[in-house]
Image 1 (cartoon, rainbow, N blue to C red):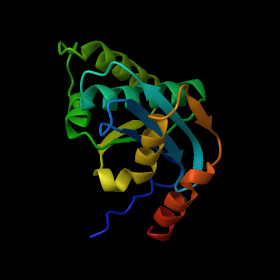
Image 2: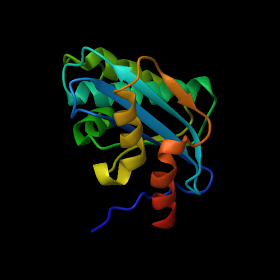
Image 3: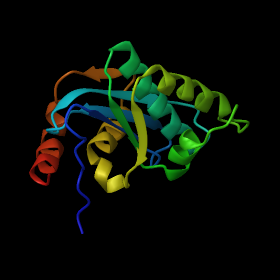
Length: 164
């Protein structure tokens, strides 16, 4: 059964963040799309020195939210395929005391800067475009930002739009 990318409600933007943990190199990819599935922005970022897939995933969320705050996007749905990350972000705690706690604490502060942010969990197959960006990031030497759909993502975006 194909997992469909669910579009956000009208007036909202959806951030799909992903981390590629198949290779020894880490790569973050996130894409911001509107209710029609149109890609408004994205980023591919290579990572080094990761402790775990969770570390990569929470960094993907943090980098996505830093981008959202800096570029004044609002009414955001932040998706992650890491259920543990989504649950920790949804929990109301004073301070996260895990090894990655400082990243969670920073991310929670960023989430609080927006007037409306919802953090949801989506299966990996529903997040394919972001995963392709994350895989691409593993081969990069520096961050790449996109404000339109790059050619290597066109097929994935069109496939998701056709399945909406």
